Image (cartoon, rainbow, N blue to C red):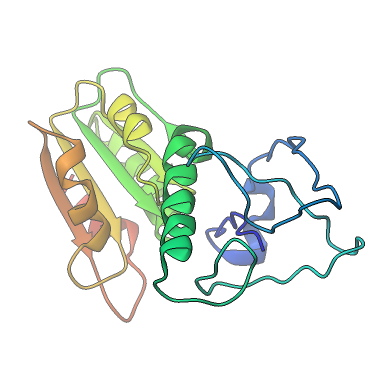
Length: 204
């Protein structure tokens, strides 16, 4: 009855070496008395955990459910569980953020990307620097919650942020709009084929 975090690797199996080290944290274990799969006090509290292959049946589900794990839609307890999940993620947003940095102190432009496009973006930054342009790169390994602090820190004194992503309208660029006040936000978008470094370099 738990939702764990999965990392999407840029490039799939070829990028296993890029998987960040994920710390193992101890968590309270459920006891037999009065156990409920999603029992919590404070909204951001992590409920006691019932181990897989333990004495209780453990089910993985993406459906809405009440504190006993029964499928429900919009009763009061199920809505409470949904608020709990949202608050739990929000409270740990900074800890969940995983990024790859290649920063330049005096960069005028920060290039942000994720997934396979990160490779093209990183290469575009390398080529741009060789041409004398002042550029930084930030690769996102987690997208949501938006790692706003990491993005603002990477932007530094940059005047422009370019978001390279493989979709039609710049969906993640739109999600970033409120996190970078006073900075020009530009996009490199493409659908159907991968974005090439040269296409990113054109806007740098």
